Length: 118
Length: 231
Figure 1 (cartoon, rainbow over the protein chains, first blue to last red):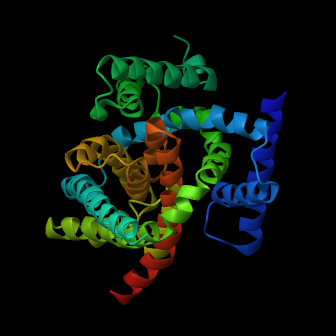
Figure 2 (spheres, rainbow over the protein chains, first blue to last red; figure 1 turned 120 degrees about the vertical axis):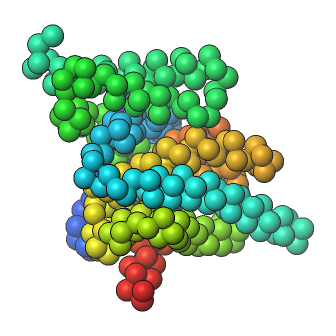
């Protein structure tokens, strides 16, 4: 039963997120707003009810599976941009590689600076 | 086999789960070699099978609605690890905000510069700019700046897959083992799929990646249209 209670809370938060998105015409996705709502709820409650913890532990490890249908789409992007693909693949793969290096080094540096200060 | 069954959600979900689990088994057998993440090998397997089974990709995607529906509640559920890691997040607030701001600019900028130097069209560059932003935000953003939403969605997924696979290798070479930095940097670059991957390391990496995904999405949504207007 507690799993259902937890899922119910998640769905209610998502509904609230979607409602706020529509109401304020925000460009943030409903589930992200729902996450903020649940986060604020947990702050007010000052803890995590077991039902919510359980639903979270159930869903989060399945994220990789949930992305599979969208990832499959990479193989069906079609030929209409065919002359653009070499540039796109290079920009994405090399760009991501450089981004990971840049972010990793920058954050390590900033975290170390902060560590030595305190 | 009966084409109605092949195009049903029942068969689509069976195919997705089976492909993912096969990918998972392979991944475990090969000591979790980063380039063979089950989301990637599973997707490749499905892509190989669909034409042979005479299933249109759009039909397969639609038949998987039931699976993808749970991305919403799972995103809401990210609030739980975020709350659990709040004490660590508070300590790292400034390094995180700075890395996210520069990282989001770098991600969009590097992609556009590389594409430009290889002679990409303007529409391609505009569709590449939101590549490190989570899909729903990226699509709105692309429409706003005049890119192609379908192309942008492809770029977003390609970014996620390549960064998710490359990150463990890059971070090992750079000797980055702190799960906070590991997760956060993965989240900036590879949004949702990166976050899925970060949770496989541990809950701390996952929470930092979730936060990075939200911050990068919000920051890019605010910044990219302004920069595009200036240029």
